[in-house]
Structure formats: C-alpha cells, structure tokens
Image (tube, rainbow, N blue to C red; front, side, top):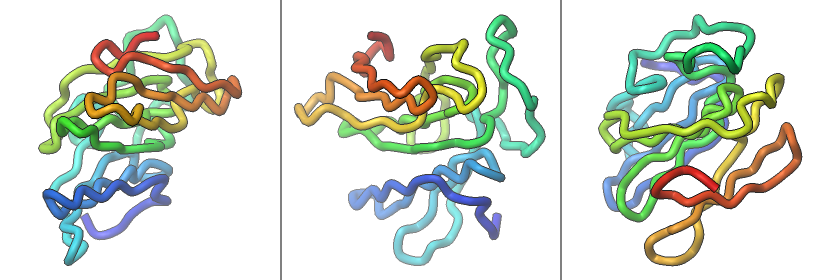
Length: 153
C-alpha cells in the first residue's frame, strides 16, 4: 500500500480527482490515488481479485485465463462513460472495470503471441461515444482497431 513497482502508465481523472496507476512491472495491479495527496484509495488485480505478485511464468493459450495480471499491467485508461480499460499485456487481454474495481468484461487479443504479449497500449477514438479502441500490439508490431462495446475487431 505504500510503494509502487515500476509503474507503466498513469491516467488522471480530473472529474473525480483520482489518478489510475498501472502498477504492473512488479506489483501487477491497478492502484487509484487521490490526485492531490497521492494517498492510496483502492487497488485490485485481474477480475477485481486481490493482486498477488505470484503468477505463472509462461502463458499457455489452451489453458483457462489467468486469474491474476501478469508482468506488466501496461495501461489503465478511463473512457468518457466511466469504464476503466486495463492492458494485461502478457496475458494478451484487455479487462474492463468500473472505477471502484468491479470487473465488467474482458477479451483476449492474439492469444498465441506469447513472450512480450500483444496488448501494450490503447487509445480511444475521438468521437464522443469512443466507438473504437486502437490497440497497440508491440509483440506483433501492429495496431488493431476494435469495437469498444464488444472488444472485437
């Protein structure tokens, strides 16, 4: 609750005065801070679970999805309608949460990418509904356009 482990990205929500931290290289979690004081408000792991630093060293695409984030949790971006999209890079998935950490949905992308993973970063389309997500896949060196409502191409 007091230290970060190599933060990958920070998103500040000026409306709620909160900062969302993708604390993913060592701690494998999302942390929410008070943007003025820096005080920890809440944190969670994959599927809204309590985070742990113990995870499988290898992604096996034929196994059920990992119940924890892997190294690294690479982004945490808040959409205009108030959902938090988290890049679970090495697990090749985007997970969506309510701002309080309640899990909403997820979807995998290029599950057989292995190694560095395929979900490196995201950006929302500029329309008010943010209909699309631009997904940066560093492992395969591509950008995919996916529909935000379904998380599919």
